Image (tube, rainbow, N blue to C red):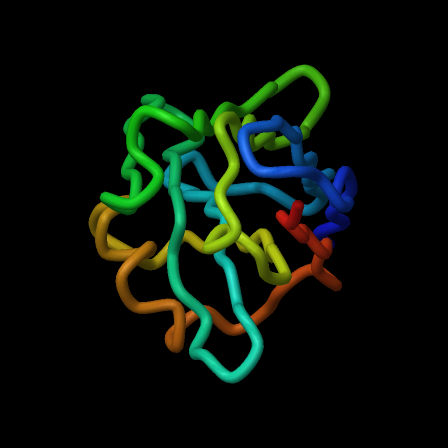
Amino acid sequence: RLVESGGGLVQPGESLRLSCAVSGLSSETAMLGWFRQAPGKEREGISCISVSGGSTFYRNSVKGRFTISWDNAQNTMYLQMNSLKPEDTGTYYCAKDSSFPTVETMCTVPQLIPSWGQGAQVTVAS
């Protein structure tokens, strides 16, 4: 099960931190990721992380602004989002999977991910 929280309405340049409480994570090869879906657009990968080794992948548009992390003790994944822009607006979903070879693969083929959290709305507007 995946439960996102932390969304909201912020102005450009401000920050938000999303959280994803993860349960049922049994595989050491599991990967987790954050995905975004803007109105009228397909869901896209924002950032993905491997649970065991900490490998990460970021979409080019968020590099240097967003940071993904995994707290194994809390079974929670985070996405720290700084310097937010209007184009970051969308519903953010977290996902888990153990079948992808790399975090980049997981982030670039979201259509292959079978289950998702309920989503958290992020709106960046002045």
